[in-house]
Length: 79
Image 1 (cartoon, one colour):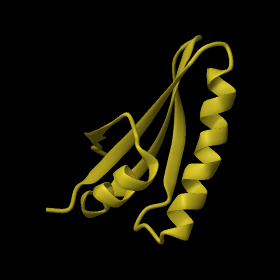
Image 2 (tube, one colour; image 1 turned 90 degrees about the vertical axis):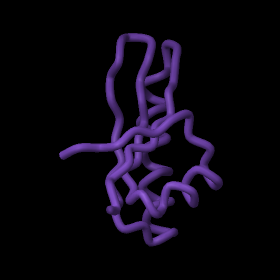
Image 3 (spheres, helix red, strand yellow; image 1 turned 180 degrees about the vertical axis):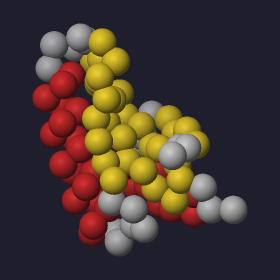
Image 4 (cartoon, one colour; image 1 turned 60 degrees about the vertical axis):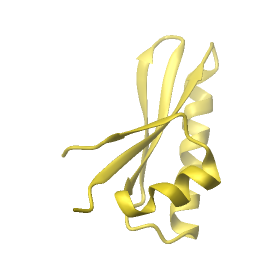
């Protein structure tokens, strides 16, 4: 089975929103450059001092992304 994995970076502080949104741009560029199967990146609000940036990848691409971008964590993504 080749599941979708949500690879996550967390940002904290008063500039967390802007930092996460900027990181999203770089994640989208990376997905295109590496020709990943998915090119879905986004941000999520956690609270006023914490935001997440994420990239959805196929399970067989996780190691490539992990080694290149050093995410904080990953979780299985369910549609």
